Image 1 (cartoon, rainbow, N blue to C red):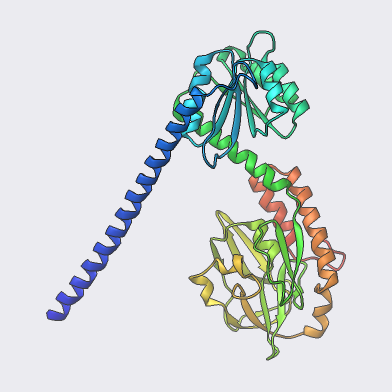
Image 2 (cartoon, helix red, strand yellow):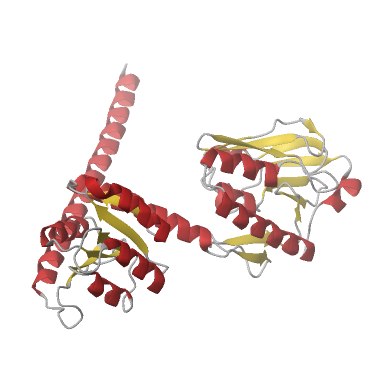
Amino acid sequence: MEAIMVALIVILCIVAFITADVLIRVILQRLAEAKLRKERQAALETGLRLDFADEAKTLKRVEVTNPKAKILAVDDEEVVLSSFRKILVLAGYSIDTVETGQEALMLVQHHDYDFVFTDLKMPEMDGVEVVKGVKHLRPDIDVIVITGYATIETAVETMKYGAMDYVQKPFTEDELVDFVNKTYIRRQDRLERQIKPKIHLVTPTSGESPDKHTFNVPAGIFIAPEHTWVSIQLNGMARVGLDDFAQKIIGEIDDVKLPKIDQVVKKGEPLFTIKHLSNSIQFFAPISGKVTAINTELISDIDAIKYKPYAEGWICNIEPERLTEELPSLKIGADALAWYQQEVDTYIDLVKKISDPDAFWTTISKMFFQPKTESGKE
């Protein structure tokens, strides 16, 4: 009875400790958020007192520390601009506002904005002309059109001239913040995809590059055309894993279905499965043989595949059956580097063409991860 009481006390103490830890984290997070909001409110008040007439007659500027993005808003209605400043500054954005299209075009030539929000109906220069002007002067800036219900068709028309999207007014604070946050994510995603990846040869002295835009190719390890790798161990076993190209284009790996001990596989047969969100991506045996060991550490540390794909992130060991015959189909050294570059270039071209997520994963799996014939086709 005494032992049971001790056990209960220990359990209660653990529960109390966990509860207290969670509460402390929540309280600290709320305090940090309150402090950040106070700082942004102060920045808003300070910015509105400053005079930037030397840059543009109607310019008002509010800058925050570590902004998500820098926005220029143009509208002939000060009440709309006031709403933009208050709402978006508190949401973590730095913002400039002006009341004419001419001022907006002048400012984009001297400042690096991420977005320009322009009203559609303005005197002298309307939103259509602002869109054309901004995309001509600074094609890197994304333009969003502010429109009323009666001008939605015209707003849609502006997309022909390069506008990214449109937002309808009137809008609530939550609606505007949600729209801008989603638009910001879209921009970041597009910019990420445009970055030209690098190929890095991993050696004992250079090590793996942690850069997500760098694909690591290990020296002395064989790479299969289906993006698994094979490392011949001192005891003659072949260690198999997922290569850096595969794990980086898949992204976050949620789970892995490992093969079974003593499972006999032929080259090109299913070996293990990676799960990403609702997608299950099958990977195939790079060589024939019997599975002699599996990496059970991945059950508790799945991120090892991401951070150390060629070391702690291995999948299984295979006792080779036809190693001499099958090794020539794998890439190593200079051949692996050249082939990797071709795969990366092919992937970049595909990303530009495919927008549907389901079609993306189907195409990627077929193109890169399914077994190839001698001619190189699936």
